Length: 233
Image (cartoon, rainbow, N blue to C red):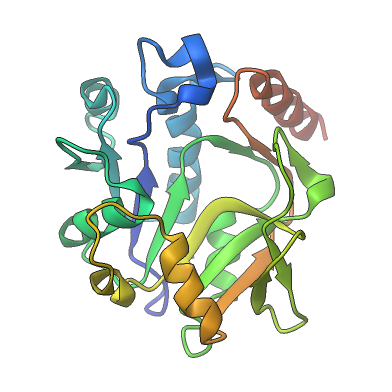
């Protein structure tokens, strides 16, 4: 829930090419691929609306005009990435003047969720005195549609190190101070995480619910089945 200690803004990563989606993204951006009758980005916005007021920015690159039209009137600001896409770190840095918040929530727009709202769960666990970032993680047995191993091992105090354990869900709270220390215009937020790991300032919390990575066409029915199961409970 909103509080003075929590981010007041949300960055939606929506600029990618969605190449793993194949033909589904030949004529539309991945955030407009539908799951259970709604575009993926609408699932993300439903979580924002359930959380409460957040200044929201979406970055745009591939077929950004379609996203701009779809999101018209939805209280979303736009950060255009032209001529080159800037990856997560560069994209977030470019959007900072629009976000006007430190820390910020960031969210990938290619997942489906059940259970506790991930933004609420992060806000309740956020401790800026101990953390520079708080990542929402998924236990492997709760993850659907995910190809590959885990990303992080978590200590009892929530601090992280890299290893084949929990999976990063694509949602976090992040302090943005270190963004200006990266010289490259386009870079991954993994560079910030590495710096935070060295200082013991990267933490995680496990998601209380289900999650499906909708990065490939075959993940769509998995996500729809997960959402239907949750609705039947």
